[in-house]
Image (cartoon, rainbow, N blue to C red; front, side, top):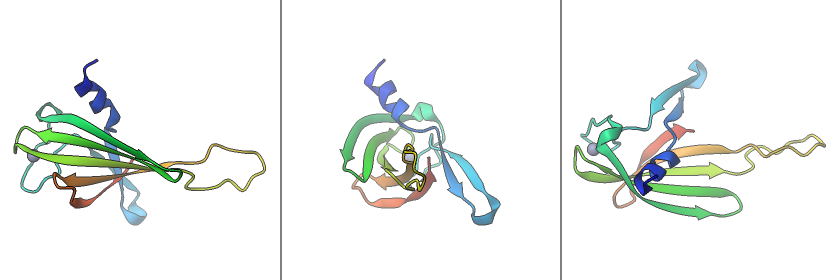
Length: 117
Ligand SMILES: [Zn+2]
């Protein structure tokens, strides 16, 4: 497996957007999140770098992606919270974890919260 494929595997295929009472909408993460770009082809998206940070509360993975359509770079930030809900039962359960996806531009400016994964 090449590095590129390995990085691609780190990216969830979909994120879920909460639509209040109407449930969740599923969106593909195989798209460019930069302004004025409509690239939705994974063929034209090239992940090339990964950064990881972790503390006892959350794990953050940043995947840098080059868009071959607009020739710009953006960052998908995957934030996994640990122990979102603590079990009140006596039996120890695996803490629930939840992931948040954000898009950042090349300079790290937040382009917005995309959804959950
Ligand atoms: Zn683009």
